[in-house]
Image 1 (spheres, rainbow, N blue to C red):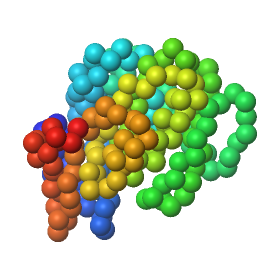
Image 2 (tube, protein in one colour):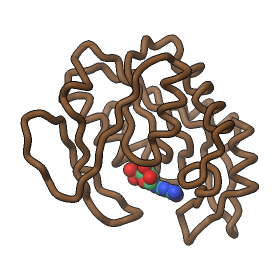
Image 3 (cartoon, rainbow, N blue to C red):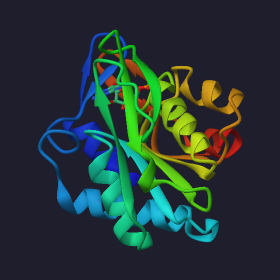
Length: 199
Ligand code: 5GP
């Protein structure tokens, strides 16, 4: 999505080897117009899939998920994160390891909000190592729901997330921006031909 790539070039900041900071428009201050445009793009990409529900994880997945939910006219469920493992019968749960924070958190969704008839679209802000998506996949599977695919705002394609989720059987992944590399603090995007081959 060109509009998003331009914004990343203009306002994203590369931190260290592999972190992109986008807090001026995506996950702290939010550019609501850009967010709405991204929701419409997700809706276009998954329009034919019969999506009945969107599943994301708090906090930064919520904004793109809500915009996609609005455009597809379906409810949005976000998994809550907690540090401690809570044992309960009324929630679906999964453990998610964060490489950026080097911590494992439990994510949980109340069983009332996902059912076996659901066709779930997973949404998140970043795809890096794939741990968040795999946790969401586990939760949807516990509900016996179908998964139609995953919509990602920014994929760091030089990290193994896409391959990890493909290996786990999650296909139909669409990322609005795919980053091939960070070079001298600059963001290099994958070109469209690479994207077509690799999608
Ligand atoms: P994964 O689970 O794919 O390893 O990482 C995805 C999660 O980690 C996202 O939900 C996101 O919050 C966070 N994350 C991973 N890489 C980055 C990054 O470069 N920048 C920011 N802001 N968050 C990231």
